Image (cartoon, rainbow, N blue to C red; front, top):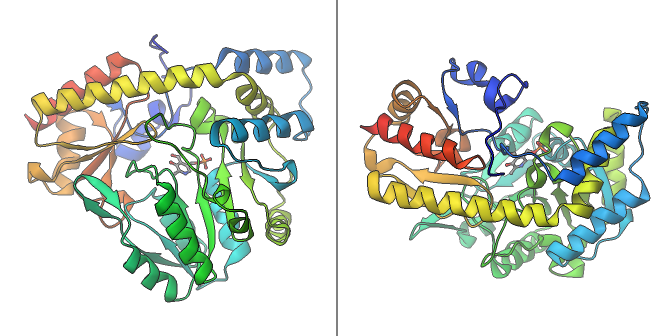
Length: 384
Ligand SMILES: Cc1ncc(COP(=O)(O)O)c(C=O)c1O
């Protein structure tokens, strides 16, 4: 990863899609959550090999791929799942939509914890369900859950809880105690948990991701977990993800929605890449995690020295740095103008993540160090 790769003119959302989103494209892209790194070499080799065959008809997700997923989850997350629990989806956001349709009716309440990944709101609202928010509380520079509020919201008739674990953009890797408390409260009020764990693999010691469904066998009855190799190995364009659904009745309901959608299998290359990544990508991932960590430390040091009014919320997982800009005294609109017009830097703006996201920006540092350096220069320029 220590090699800059030009991604312009590859139809990359991050590099080529800025005009549509920001109205201009003379920006340095440190927004959308994908990495500027090539995936593990064995993934590319497996894809080339498959390409050489030359026929790309409908593809099944075979036993080898399922075993690769099962082994990966056992090894990296100490969770023994069964191949029969796996269901597939082109992405985690589509899985969220499927879960909303399978387990709620129009008008039902769906709980989330803001500030949170924008499509959580969109998927609830686009499916005509009601967003119920139990906002995270910032305490000493770290987000925490207000469990009294969480319980009050569950009590109000919530049907489904969309958990973001690890949390994007808040950077939290939830502890065992926090996960158990959330799960027990959901059990008490009969609420199904749909846990978006797409960032699960991007966690390094001392933090440890724990899949909520793994904590206790009985949680299997009311949890579904969404995972993917897309963030982990930078394969988002291959549109392949999976759900872990231990409860058979829940699997039937999800199948029912898939039948309505006409969805039945994954993309050929997505399947090939997923299998190769889980079988052979571990060392690559550990190297990437170390590179990401050094980029995070670099950003923290530079901001502390040069822009102390910007406060980094420690990312316990993933490669997205959530930065509190409220001490600059700028409103969101001004913040946007300064960054886009003066700094020429594309970041995600916090107000898109719901209540509590105002005055924050989200910076993606899964890129070559030279881009991070340039990004920091531009941040300084924006606030100069
Ligand atoms: C928490 C979270 N869920 C889901 C996604 C996107 O998932 P997919 O591309 O599989 O739909 C992202 C991408 O940034 C994310 O951060």
